[in-house]
Image (cartoon, rainbow over all chains, first blue to last red):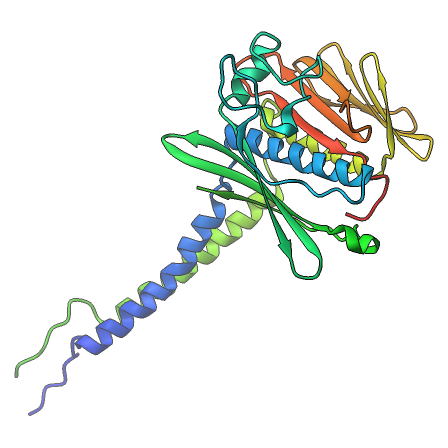
Length: 175
Length: 150
């Protein structure tokens, strides 16, 4: 007499079932990820982005004033003037105070202290197709780490003034 | 007869998978419903207000070709006609359009400064200092492109 009984799961079936179960779990993870609010920029990162925007707009204004203008490369320099500082203020921040000079602590502390942590650097590259790339980096320290916010822009070299308006701009953040 | 016992039957595991998919569907429907009625933005968030100011001036600067600084703000001009005005009145930053209709872009400001770059006539520099000293200030610039493709 044969007894018909229900068989247990063998290993292969179990693995198959677990893989199906794992695949079924993915949408749950996805939904949770989607429901989570997008990571917001910290105030420091936002301020760094605004400063890089200022530098890039200054480059654009220079280009409008003089179509042959190309921004020079510069090392990382402070954006505010500090007493007895060895490094000079970045060229892009030399005229931003209400008096027309660099921001100093004595002029405007409310602007000076938040900006003191930032440094501005501009990298430039000659590219094929008579293009010129300018990358603006605003660097700062955050919880012991070096952070950088950057904006980059393609500019036409002076030889091809017809296509000077063909700019492209990208934004990013690096650690 | 010797029978091999499984911890869980294959059908039960498949059933759990289907249950997971079913729960996911319910959650997706719930998420869809909540997206349809988003919560109001927190107006006290200074970065949200700064973003509004940034986007507004950037959009106007794209078409403006010159600016006229006033006692309490700036007027952006396109081909000789007023495009938009930004005015700081009683702690609020207002934007007015061609028809002189105004709306508040941001409140609770201590000071708003609009100035032209001393060497670049088409560069507008904007500084906003909030009443709350613990909040970050706003500082950036806008090149007046005069409608040039960007």
